[in-house]
Length: 78
Image (cartoon, rainbow, N blue to C red; front, side, top):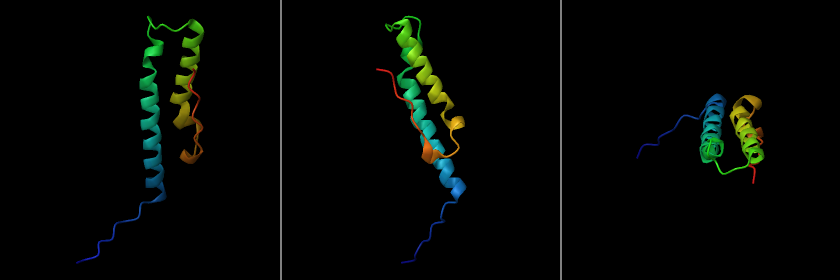
């Protein structure tokens, strides 16, 4: 049986994979709160604003952090 050696990913490839995982999680968190921003949402105006702020913080994640290991996920409003 032949030994198969797989190439070791580069630092850039590892970071790209990390950012991809972060964006995937961010997109799922955004999708889970889409309903909070529709016109007939049952939320108060204050809660709606809290969720809007949370969603903006999620959108800003990739640009607001240079290192994928230093992500500080925003807290979802209750």
